[in-house]
Length: 57
Length: 235
Image (cartoon, rainbow over all chains, first blue to last red; front, side, top):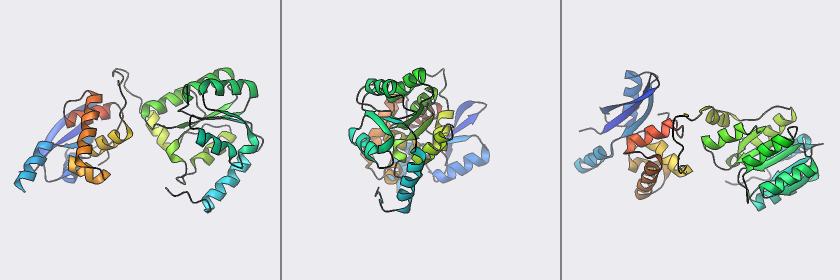
């Protein structure tokens, strides 16, 4: 399973979180920009999914 | 950083400083005695240096006694605070231009310096980088204008939200670097690789920053760092 990333989005002056599962951080940023143009403020990888991917590798 | 004393940039800076400081009357106040002495003994500055001190009260007394037209001061002093000094000098001698060198590069300190009516603000870390901040500051002040380089303006413009409680303890520069890297989507191991530090060190910085911001988990840590204006991730 690919790692999970939280997209931090600024919408109408409020920060919102949307979780996606993509292969890496670059892909998370790309998806965030594509789906939420001019809204993305940050991307945070879930450390748990890092552990899972390390276990599975 | 290697300081290339024979470089054209250094020689050019000395020549420019000599011209820009002609006819000026300078007082310097810095907490770092070695930096202060080096500044005072620098050839273009030495002839125009009226006096120097290492504490806020001494610096203020010198300004009152010697009536300089330029105060060069660092934010960190042996006792007192550089930004308080420029506030006090502004109150009693507004015609004395005030150039402050900030040691900490945080939004709060930049904002504080701007609010204290500093005529010039620069970061200590910009010395020796070849950016020419010091010379540009002298040039701008000589023209009677205010010198805030782009990075300072950007940082100062992001005013903290008034509804946020003040941080009990500021994040260190390294903690901010780590949080910035986390906000790019890097794993702890990725942050460690990028900053060339150990995984355990990254975890410690994340844990400490999380505690200082009162956050729960990595995502809330980044959200709070953004809200407080501590980071501005650009993926």
